[in-house]
Image (tube, rainbow, N blue to C red; front, side, top):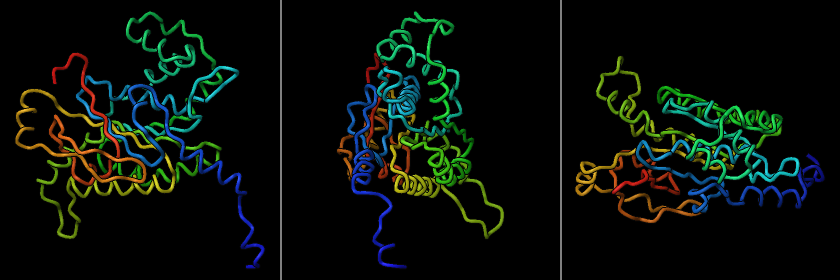
Length: 293
């Protein structure tokens, strides 16, 4: 190769700085996620019991991701990017996602959305929105449903090629959203008690499965700088609190490239393996409204 061909770059310094600064900018999400200083390659874990609106926060984050910053003179404050939603709980309602998207497009403010959700004052048939922008945002949302850990691993292994394909079409993936990261924990834990057919088969456990999941997600974050958000269900109550007195664990105190978790005692019993706990960079604990715990 000639020296001039080796020296000539693929992009200018101005283009390089614009690309790096755009990747490093913090994610400004809706409350309560706006309090967390999130950046690309961070892993946020949203922990809470069933009625704590974990999936709703995940949907709102996806909506903010696919919405544009501005459109026809209207400011939406989105990321103008692509979002990948992996549903492990198999309870995602695409009609609810579509309805919330139409509300964001129609109102343009979070207060109107919350008012409609709490008081049911706006009917679905009366929502006026930009259909062209609605179609664009729906195309930026990719939904995957997995029914076991092996489908989840297969999805993660193929996401790299899917992201490259989206980049070829001009879509930049900003978020990887995982609903209920511990959905298959107890199933995988029970399966380890069953004998494996054949002595040459490699045994799998909860620890090895989660280690492989963490490795695949880490590879994706290194190749494609984006924000990973995962929800995790937990239990609160007297029994859980009594058990926690005897078996309390501290969250990971190791730090990633940006930010880290401070050590504090958790008011719930942690059941995820250490491979996942050490991978999480930020954690949010949710409680239902009016909860005493």
